[in-house]
Length: 294
Figure 1 (spheres, one colour):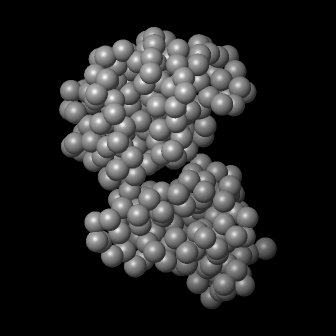
Figure 2 (cartoon, helix red, strand yellow):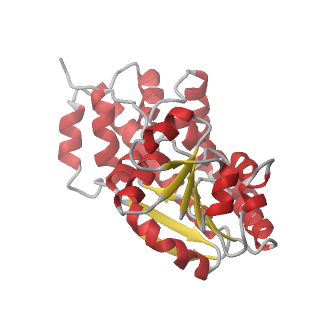
């Protein structure tokens, strides 16, 4: 029996793929409508404590480290009910320190813990092409790997507890700085009088081409900021990057500037936009809008 807690933008399609693969999945979320939608797809409604007591593999997809801690160790938490031998796989984006804390607490109870954040956004979650990066004991990773492969196209064990979360931080630096570079470049092109869609088509097959470019540039040009990955979530991730970097004495000047860009977008009320909406910061600076000429 599989348990899944957290049925948001990522969790909901991940559960759907587990159901398509023929698994019995118990689900829980603070939003009743999210649970009801998946019950209609064949999932079983449950509570987090019931999931802890009855499921041998439990997945979490939650907004932040403190929420993960509350779900696992708070009142009526999963850890209180989980039997020895259970493996909890946290797909949330949190800090390596938070992941190590979970691993240490659960190890004392004989419960396995895998920190296993993912990359691919809502599109990848729907398509079942997510890339998972896992930390923890390799034997625990092997127990959850078959299910990860039902939800994604790759699942790699990175090393000891916290390694998956550290890998995700590196991923978020690359993704968000690339979106920022695409934003600056398209704003420059528009200010210079060139159709941004033509710019995108011209460069996508060259060295500037990337999955980020192919995913986010069309969204910018179409003014489609419906979130597949909210700025708020990425803002939190970049904050985690900088906190971790400071602990390790790693200077990150570009990432620090990106955090301030996101802070400005927060003040402007854009936290619920997709992170392709980063372009709006540069549009305001240059007084242009990235869109096809009328």
